[in-house]
Structures are given as structure tokens and as C-alpha cells.
Length: 187
View: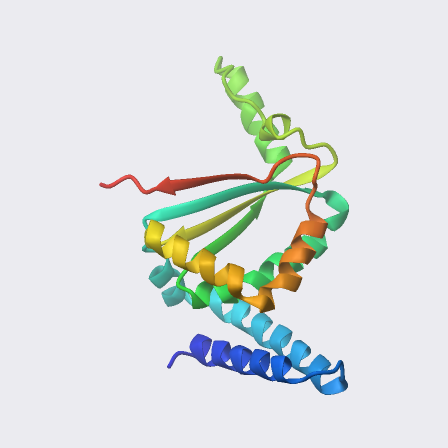
């Protein structure tokens, strides 16, 4: 059993004890803290374990999401998103988050324009982002069936509800959560 699997088992065990505990008490709060601590340790292990990345990198199906987040929520959304990683990894999904490097994007466009290539548009204009960060989430699955299985499991996992509600409270709601599912080009 890998370290990641052992940590995931500890998280699942804590979740079972939370469900058994009827009232809000110190023990129950400690279980939530335990889950958060184990999740953070898992993230560090995942980010430093190159074998994990290679294992999860073999997917041929990609779910991509773009969303806007008020700049004031940058640190909070960063912490929220990191908490999702262990759950996805334990379900065989490689998960990556990126936020737009606005200055670099504009420099690239200006460089292209100087070369006579006037075809690039800054994504901030396309997504109408003002005083907001643009985030991109990439979820790598083995195939479409794997995605369906993982999403069904995610929707029935009550432990993810608080994270999902927190996420929805941090993103901008003046626009859409843009998504697309992609198949890898076969070589």
C-alpha cells in the first residue's frame, strides 16, 4: 500500500467517525482538523512524487474549466482548490490548477502584433474579467467512462459538499463556468 493510499484510508476512517458522531463536539472538530492535516500532507507528497504524476498522466480524456475569481479571493480559492487534489488523485484523476499570468499574456499579444500577427485576443477580454483572476482547472481521466464514474462518486460524496459550497462562494457569478471535454489526439 502506498503512502498516499494509507493517508486516504485515514481520511475515509475519519469521515466514518464524523458520520457516527451525532453532536458538534470537540472530538468531531478534531476529526475535521485531522482530515485537513492529512489532506495537506497528501498534497505535499503528490506534488513531490514524480511517480504519482507519471501514473496519473496517462489519461486520454480531459475536462477543462475556466472561471473567474475576484482578486480579493485569490488566497482563499488557492487553499480551497488544494483540498480537492487528494480526493481526485485517490480516484485516479490528475488535477491541475492555473491562474492567468495577465502581464505575460499581454506581452505575448503585443509581441505578436509587432510581428504583424494581429489575430491574438487577450482571454480577459473574452471572459470579461475586470478586477478578477482567471483560473483554469484541468482534470485528466483515462476515458469518458472514467470521468462519468468519478463525477457520479463526487456527487454522492457528502464530505465534498462543504468544499463545493465554499468554492461556489469564492468564484464570480456574473458569468459562466466555462467547460469543455476533450479527447487526446492519437499519435
